[in-house]
Structures are given as C-alpha cells and as structure tokens.
Image (cartoon, rainbow, N blue to C red; front, side, top):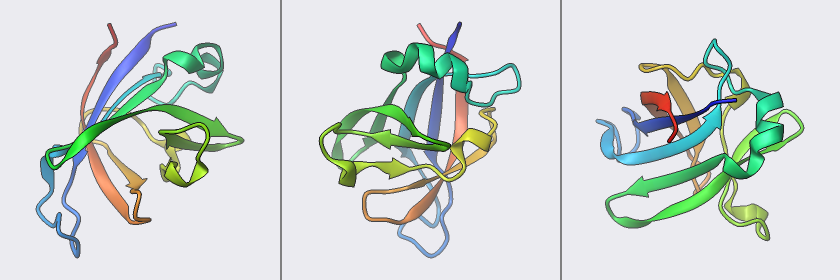
Length: 124
C-alpha cells in the first residue's frame, strides 16, 4: 500500500473574505488513494494511524490532526476527545484527488470553503 501526500489550497470563495482565494491557506493530507485517485477505504482501515492532516494559514499556528471516518462520513479530526473540532469534508469519499480538482471543507466556524488540489505525490 502506498500513501499519497495531497496538498489543497484555498480557492476562490465568492461572498467571503476569500473571494480571490489564498495560496497560503490550506491542508496537507496523507492518505491512501485508489488508482483512480479516490480515497481507498480498505487501505485506510489498515493504515489509519498514518493518515494525517495539517491545516495551515499565515495568521494561525498549524493544526495537526488525522483523517477520520465514521460510517461513510469522512472528516478531519484535531482532538479525539472533542467532536466539536471536527471539520467535515463534503462527499470526501467521492472526490477524486488529482491536481486541479476541488474539495469543500467546512471550517471551524461552520462555513463550507472550497479548496483546490495543487499537489498529489507519493508520501515519504
């Protein structure tokens, strides 16, 4: 099984303070992908502890968490003890992780924001 490093940066989000996007805000995710670029749920079950996420932004400290799954719902979890910090990712299991694709993440304030996949490569 190979893990991939996926980098997503904030895309244009009209009607928010990020109307023009922001290349300095985003996520770096380590996860197993199928040959089609979808999350590999079977491989995830075997490598759960290695599936991590880092949220980054210039005006805050980076937040390290993990990719988590409950049923068919995928999310980013930053504290196992606190469900209120979970960031749901809209239909993450159906997203194709390839450069140029878009992913919607609900931020800590409950706003859905769109991110663009800018890098997919084998994780070290």
